[in-house]
Length: 452
Image 1 (tube, rainbow, N blue to C red):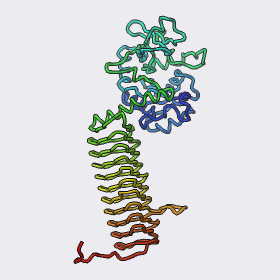
Image 2: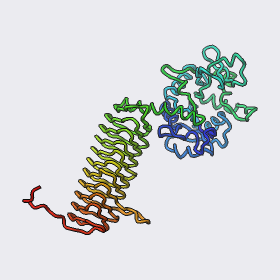
Image 3: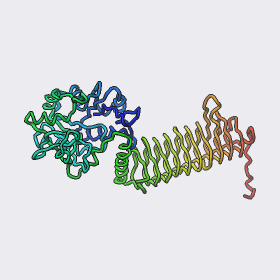
Image 4: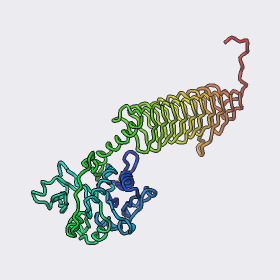
């Protein structure tokens, strides 16, 4: 169920799309449902949260609840599109992202074992204040769910609350759903009324306690507002970190490391403190991501070292050294064995194998060949005020300190530029460009008899 507006979030974004560790909170509920049942879940949505359908188009089926009229009505519209040959129905809340697939399976198994028409998760809450109480009889037969304001003193002393996870025998559910009566106070249809209908039909509901090694106090932490979101988020973030550590990744300080659930990391990678890995990032084995680095939607090869640098939507080869304080903006490709150092920036640049860019320089919209040296303070002037232009630097070229390369421009293989030059035209292979504006010269070659 994901049709609610989530008004307490005070957000234009539907509540169940708020991200946790790089994924919408609803994604975790969908994962648990699919893992437990082997089927695509059916998500109930309302017109106000129709964005859900775009986000999960490949992961779920959908049922439209024209106007949110309570949990009972949400199940009613779901049943209207559900195939007639479905034998069992599991109902979950879209704002409870910590729910485990094992708990969903446990609910299904327990309902079958007891032969109950329905089963509901009964959570032992140390402080049940504000929650509806699950009233049970012998053998955990659920009699009714009573709201706190309607409970007497004896009922208020009950610590069992409704977790919002249900399993149903589908045929009975279809027969009972149209018998729900609107609430006198709100006019909504509440799923909890089915507990009493089951008893009246002589097929009483089963209250299901938590499974062995489960922790329903933790799993049923729902998210209603941003404070709840901040409380749940660390649990999922640590689950992500724990998964990587189990698979052979060294994370020096999990409390100071942020890794999205979408990130892939191979064994023997080391992650130092204060590192952020986001999006579709992939880190290959034996690489070290040192403190202060942020990597987003990028691929980092084997045996690399990235230190206190930012890498966005880029691809880095093997044996590359980056940082400290380097910035690769989107569209960069860095070849094997390259070095990118202090305050070096690249944007939409292909940087060849074993090339070096060590000191405060900028390469934008550039094609840099292999074994090129980029001196300190080098800039590719790629923007003329109207359009971006490309700079091509050939294999083995040497770009002297403080050179400005005004694009569009090609520096040929093995060419040099002198320190402080402003290069405004192509430099042929093997030639030297020097001056402001730069003129093309022959490179002076040392005599074979000259002492070095």
